[in-house]
Amino acid sequence: MDTTYATHGTLFFIDGFCTKEGIVGLSQEDHLNLISRGFGDEEVALTVRSAERSGRTACDEGVRLWASLLTIRVDGEEKFQIRLSAEAVGRLKERGFLDLEPVALEIEKLPYTIPSEQFDPAAFEPKLDESLLGMGL
Image (cartoon, rainbow, N blue to C red):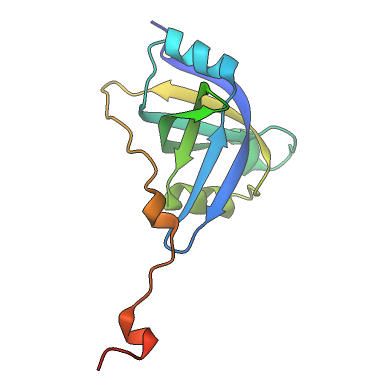
């Protein structure tokens, strides 16, 4: 079984009300190739490099992260996306990566399997504190 997979994607930074996360969408071909290698909805080791810019050590060497590989359904087809934590996004930003930047990826299976947590849509909803409404006396 092949435990690594290399591909390309686009880096997206998500600045929600209660979270700062990131994602990298993968193609249907990537989904099939990863499934055939035994990957599923699980935590993975991920190395991110800039696909277009070179000469910057941080982007040439790559940043190694812990990420979540998740299945999503787009237009009736299942695809994988990679979910990046706020900490991972912070590390990428510190190393000069930009929102919507094309990236080269190396996805590596961990020696043990940890199931991924799906996105919580409620985390992206604004949370109102009743004390701010002036009604709670």
